[in-house]
Length: 258
Image (cartoon, rainbow, N blue to C red):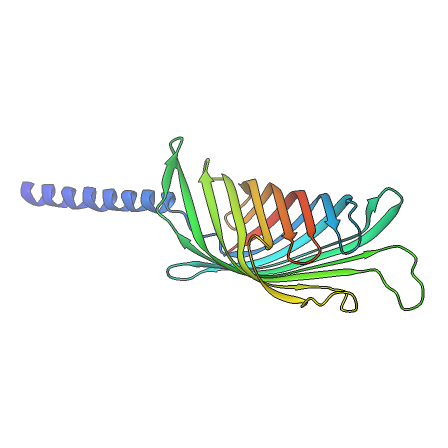
């Protein structure tokens, strides 16, 4: 009887220990944030578009982003659409309307977690494809069939990296960095004055589009979270008449994970 009691006691201890260790492992495991989300951001943009003028135009410009992501067996996938527009980007008394948009596909593969200040940090790295477009129409008087507008687009292949620094069960510091490496560029050109093709294959030195974000996420519920982040975006095209657009933004995100 004593042997049977010891045997049963040992079995119960093993079962309880196994369950506790399994729960602890699950709680420390980080899952790719698959789900849907919406972002709103606003900040300052500065544009120098020499197809229109060598002067710098600047002003505030809001934007919206919608994204959907999911986790496959070995990688995460994210589809993201961004749109922003403002008709009050100014240079002294002259204003212009600027429209920007981007459609981005990201494939994110997990790297080995690292410890930073004693906290687990999870990294994802992968390729990115993106279609970016830009439109600029100044509010200036024209005559006859003349018009003043500028258009550019980049169909790019590049890379991205994302990091998730877990402060606690509900708080995390997140960052992401995206960069274009090779692009098919499109640019509005004056065909009557220049013998230049409107389409070219561009390296990152001639046609660059990149972004960086750093933010803090708070988990309201199991599936619902909010994030406040700072974002920086840079677009530079130099293969034709140069275009440089730089913006920094404060971004609020609402995410639903499943």
